[in-house]
Image (cartoon, rainbow, N blue to C red):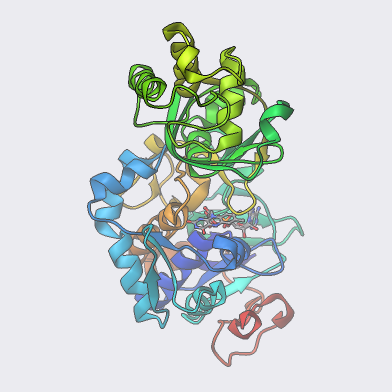
Length: 437
Ligand SMILES: Cc1cc2nc3c(=O)[nH]c(=O)nc-3n(C[C@H](O)[C@H](O)[C@H](O)COP(=O)(O)OP(=O)(O)OC[C@H]3O[C@@H](n4cnc5c(N)ncnc54)[C@H](O)[C@@H]3O)c2cc1C
């Protein structure tokens, strides 16, 4: 049994950020990060297509949390303590100048996630890789953590930052059912997917009571784009309950209702009576999509506008604002994929990220029932919750805890402090910042 003051399970964004903050705020504490993969921060490395969209513009926390379909309300206080502004300051202070794009997304100026990873690991921390945790249990003095290999660690404070994982189901906390969020939809409607490549701005989609607005991309197998990712996030649970088979309604002109479209068509009938209905869109939609809309309205595409009865105009207008698409499944978005669900937030004090059920146990990151839209919101939640957990742990006097721990270290430290010259008994398990250059 090896003793650490603090054990962090999971070397992702949340766990490593917590370790970095602890290394700076409480360097006297013995902290270890146990990571099952052979390197920490795998998702951060690939995030934002390798550029790492690490947070988002925030003019008010109240508006910022609207980007979290789950956990937004609970994060209000947390973001006031450590939000986007503090994140930007932290990374810039640690040598990662950032740049904000027009859409509000923040990236490293270098456009490389490697710089974010280097800044985090350079804070100096013990990360033990290839160390999958099989289970944890409460002891009198704290916790006992058991690896799949059979090795055991004891600690006073335990931070779970595994992004998910089977063993969180056995620790006495309620786990909200986990389903994917941020994905795209597929359809078997080949006439529709033959329009692949068309991007339509300002579309409204609605399905199973969930609505979203934004740009939509028609793909070779279905629909994608910001509006679809947003809908998949807000409706994650309902779509999963329906096994991703349902009818989606699309308003191709989100700014207009059926009556307004009808009026535009009536004016067009007067101004261009000789034009054919299927050849040109009076409301600025791509021509092939317009042709499909006219066909599905039941109006002959060769019919001249001048000979269209008002009823026919209404049929076309209805297709524009209430287009039906049969969704037959989901695809994973190529760049971003998060889990909806996790540890129930009511059971966690969101000021400190400490369990309300088990003192000394903390949670951070995606293992919690928190998930955001695309744009840097998910990493922001990981930084925030990781920071608050570390802040809370660092403010507790653990000296007494160390004395009270039943198991004292009886092995050499199994990993070394990254960024220092300390030798280690398991150097091969450790990751040096140089690996990320
Ligand atoms: C391809 C992709 C691109 C993304 N791009 C962005 C982006 O640009 N911006 C953004 O905001 N979000 C992005 N996200 C989402 C974001 O990366 C995650 O929300 C964030 O990384 C979650 O951090 P985390 O530390 O909670 O979990 P994770 O990053 O999942 O880290 C958890 C860690 O715990 C380890 N672990 C799990 N179980 C165990 C165990 N039993 N024992 C030991 N270790 C264990 C895992 O190996 C992992 O390293 C992206 C996600 C993906 C998949």
